Amino acid sequence: MGPWEETIERVAQSFPVGEIMTPNDALTTAKSREEAPFVSDSNPDFSVIPIRPCRRLTGYFLRGDRSTHDITLADVISDGTTVLCLLDILGHREFSFVLRHNRIEGYVHFSDLNHPLVKLTFYVLLGALEREAEGHVRPLVQRDTSLVEKALGEKRLQQLKKKYRQHGDAARNIFNYMNISDVLRVAVEAGTIQASDDFIRLARRARNAAVHPALALVTRHNEVSQLADLNRETLRLLGTMQTSFAPTAENLRSMASSVGR
Image (cartoon, rainbow, N blue to C red; front, top):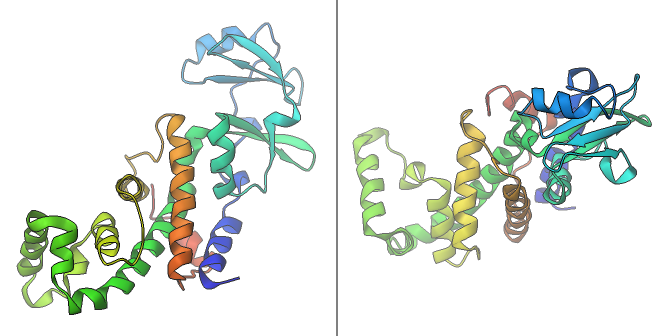
């Protein structure tokens, strides 16, 4: 296993779905199939109303088609399922119930992908990608300064130079004033990576959402598959550059206090 794979493994193991699910005690539930439609009407923010006739969840009501269902194996995932694996699961369905010690202990909805720990996961992944891309292209730009203009255009280059000049002697290098899409576009121009414009735009949007509490990683269910694609493509690019960025689990958890809140 290479350094970049160890990084992803460390991130994945640090944040299982059990840490972002809504536990049973916090769920809005109905006591019976008959009561479920009324509970749903009284709670329009919830598209799913779990049914708990006694102590255990046994079914659920879907507001969209006003249908009631028993909970089956297809509706259940393990509490150890990682956040990164959860992306693919929720790309195909809007929610799952979470199993722990052979009991359903919680519920996860695609909107839970806006949880601070999920944001932190993408902050780490995209930060590693930006760091590695910059590290590869920095010496190339030093040898050929036209690469930045070719990649970003004259207008964006002048914006970066203006910020650079404003800091005077405190300025370090032009890369300090680039965002992730700038760095990735320069890396593409330099031939360091192959990435589409769609991926670069999505990477910037996700990176912004990861660091701004008011922004969401996903707002609609169809955006979950885009986030899963972003994850896969980020892993591919990290693999091509063999990243050595490897924070410890303790580092990751300490970062959670300042990201996405």
